[in-house]
Length: 220
Image (cartoon, rainbow, N blue to C red; front, side):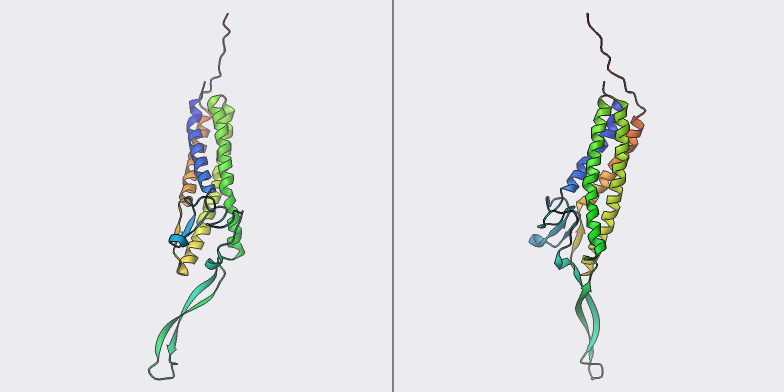
């Protein structure tokens, strides 16, 4: 008969798997789930796991050229020169180089976004083990707990890197006068992280539940 002790862990692992799948199919595949959004209207660009709006899908990518390599620098200059009478200060804007979004560190961090589909796969594997545990044997719940713990660690690393990568990107864009807002993929990843933690905890507790084997009686 079914082991009810495995159901809570199975439910939360399934929830985490679904959330991480949504995150994994973010831009350029699906624009409704994204980590960061820039611009407005037709010029809006949204960033995802394998690229951004309009780009080709790849593991690791560079930001659009118009968002990297430049920054605005403001300084005061007296016009006419200070030695002349009636000179007044004027605020002048100069565009200078800024390689923060084109650095190798930022580019390498985009490779780590592959952790989201990896965590989704581990969560799916935990769900399969959970089904085995709920349907028949305690060992399925044991493996569900172990794999969900591994998925939790993978998701935790992914979410920390997300906050660093998109936090830096958002700040650089805003410093250069470009509007940028966090997307829902960050919070979906956080939701999956919480679900996996609960799934691991309830799965570990479910190991000690009741698992009664089926009994077959021969009828004569």
